[in-house]
Length: 141
Image 1: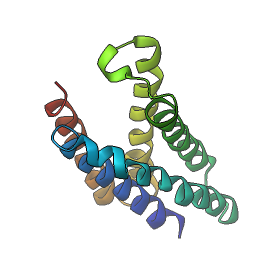
Image 2: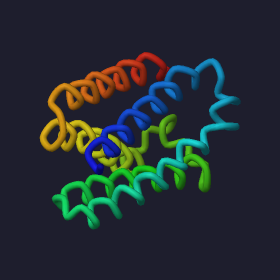
Image 3: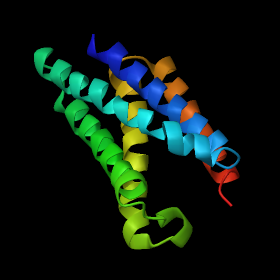
């Protein structure tokens, strides 16, 4: 049960991020109103950690889910709690941990799905990650 759940979490995560990246330039007000919904992905991530323990799966899942939760936490801290404009100021001290968690989180979804569940589903998540990057770059600046 863990593997398809983990894959679904990766799909929803990528879908959310692509949607946010697509609308943020022209509809920033909408992102500011509904963007908090993205943080609800912490609930299925915590449930997935419980599944890892119950199903005695590799602890790598727990590590990558922890990275995902850390990414959600730093996103919430920077954007919603402290309201730090780290994307605009390009302060490497703030940007580096954010980007490291962003890339690590996506890597975890792709690789764990690819290795432990399904190569085609891993490829789907890889393609979605590439789309995330393209849309993110295209809508910055």
